[in-house]
Length: 358
Image 1 (cartoon, one colour):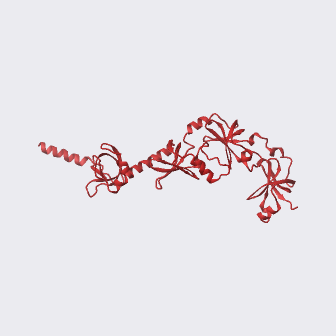
Image 2: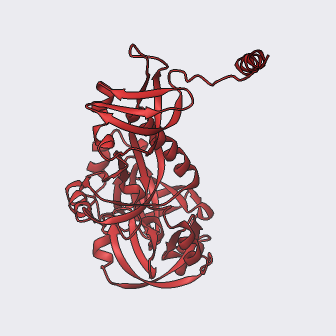
């Protein structure tokens, strides 16, 4: 009678308790049991015993050498039962999967990482996180690390970037490609709360005094507080065209500027905002059809720029000439010519000129 009751209980349990059988490509946790030669045994209770061996053992040697009995590990199921009757496991693939899951989470949360600069090239810095190589483009560097090279010479930029090799910098992950095993970092978002706190002290329209810390082709960097730099774009430096910034500004020079934008912790500055707009002064002076005298100050792909007043230049369009060569034969840099005003819009700071053949 008792035997029959025990049997009926066993039958009930067998029918009503289902065991989750691991499938290929599943991820699971197990406990290291020990090692025999080049086979690592893993307790996968309650489903059985798993092993990491052969190619998978060799792939994970660096990880396995630091493991000991009792350690909990995450593994990937390769076979639910191999020819030896064990569950075939991969430690390397599981670790990589965990890493890329972490990458996704860290990217989502903009979690900061402090990493050492491994090397540098003309485009930026190379960093490594958890065995995955990543790239920090120059465009994603903070102002204090940005290579402030006047002529944008790539060799000089690389030279400046190489000075950062070995330094620890705080970054965030902004992109991850698991297939190519590549990461893209940014230094700009790493201290966003701190940056926001510093920039919160400033408002658009504020006039600030700062020190020129860098001169590049597209403008100048200005330090306006500890750990805070603003950029004055070349278009905001003066109403006049500035061809050579290095001849106009010097590193360490003290200047005043107006804050014209604050976005994501970045401050944009303007020097010309502190000067009288010359277009307002001449709005009633010129009209369409007027004869205008101008000095050629620059050639570009659209034609030639002719200065008609200090800070005011008009475009002599290339379509008024047979070719670019013809234009440059008839117009010379620094020389004065008579033009006719074809259009004049002081609100948009735009004037077009027609060349008079002299």
